[in-house]
Image (cartoon, rainbow, N blue to C red):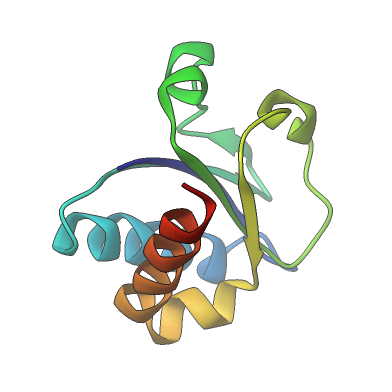
Length: 105
């Protein structure tokens, strides 16, 4: 499965980057490709390309705040989660995403 996402926390510092790292590692551990954009205090980093979004099977928004550019994901399955849930148990969360995607298919 190809996963893209955005991580953004209230302060835009620690949890944003921790959630990004955990999502990527959790997805990889489950055999998936994953790219995560961050939106924090220093702006947008690791910006997703149109091609990455087009090829994605699912979009994960690990966010605690309003983000910009969400319209890019129109027509894609979008799963929202708080950063803390991803940081605590990324593999468990990815497993839930897998089940949700299986049920959609």
